[in-house]
Image (cartoon, rainbow, N blue to C red):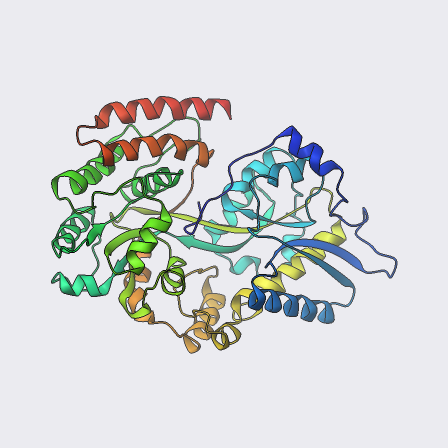
Amino acid sequence: MRSTGFRRTTVAAIAGVLALSGLTACSSDEDGSSADGKTRITVNCMPPKSAKVDRSFFSADVAAFEKANPKIDVVAHDAFPCQDPKTFDAKLAGGQMEDVFYTYFTDAKHVVDIHQAADITQYVKELKSYSTIQQQLRDVYTVDGKIYGVPRTGYSMGLVYNRALFEKAGLDPDKPPTTWDEVRADAKKIAALGKGTVGYADYSAQNQGGWHFTAEMYSQGGSVVSEDGKKSQVDSAEGRAVLQTLHDMRWTDDSMGSKQLLVINDAQQMMGSGKLGMYLSAPDNIPILVKEKGGNYKDLALGPMPGGKGTLIGGDGYMFNKNASPEQIRAGLKWLDAMFLTPGKGFLGDYARAKKTDAPVGLPEPRLFTGAADAKDQEVKKANANVPVGNYQPFLDGNQSLELKIEPPNAQQIYSVLDGVVSAVLTKKDADIDRLLKDASGKIDGILARS
């Protein structure tokens, strides 16, 4: 799941395929050539017309790319969201996907498994930026030693907290909790402020409870599924520790409030209104809290994922249509380099341009690059920062020692099972944690066996 909303659940309805089959194909001619000798590529995830500023930037960057590469013609398709869960698999199966198409990290293996992605291994050497991208992000799009895609952004989970409430509760806002015992203790002090203040909030509905349970398992050093992806591992000491902590904060400490079955919007509303001390999320929540929920940048800070063992990572990237020609793949890689993968430039990296439109600059993520490329990207970002970057230093420092782990296979189906586990613990004081984990483990084993 993305920290700001849902990811795709696997949907491959025959009706959807039939509905799409009558549409004009998105791909260009088989070899990607046009009458004027240009290589034509279709791409998606252009910002919609409603996002006027982002769309204007995207269009300008495409135009600049075409001017610098006069033999390449880029046809961009807008979309919101970039990937529609109702049509994604149907577009793939119906041959309607763009030549260069957007995917979440959790899609990569699935798209490869259903034979809908081009193997770009032999072409990646032409992508100037590829070797500068973090290895664990590159690995997401590598299946059985072959490369099928290129990362565009990456994020990791951490702890969003309210500095103002920390100060009121007598806590040091520069030292957020780094263990779950500390989270529990701090949440109790914040909740004691009264007037509807909640110390810590967690999700437990719409698959988001399962998503956070997974992140919390990682933080304890556990995993939701085995390394080979065949067996559940939720019925474990780490799983019990996660649920016991939530149970104790909810029922013993009364630091999570009485309202449960929360989803991301609920936590954001509480944090933005100054009534919530802490919740798990990624840095991209910060501008949402300010621009949409009434928060203030100076009060909002980020700490590392509590627990000290690991954190959930996610992100997105682009893959290539299985029918894309070598010329289209090469053109697509050049386009990705220019649009998204040049430090300090392009649609995501032009921080000076973003600052002029009052977009937030200085958030600690996405952090895509390594080495000199990362240093350059961070230098340009720092020079144009318009948010209190010091508020995020604990997150940056703490992340250095955490294992970065991607979401499990069949994530949405597994999250649906785990939603019930988390919601039971937060709504029933006498919930049987051992029984809940045993039952969930059996259901997850069934999901994995069918995949």
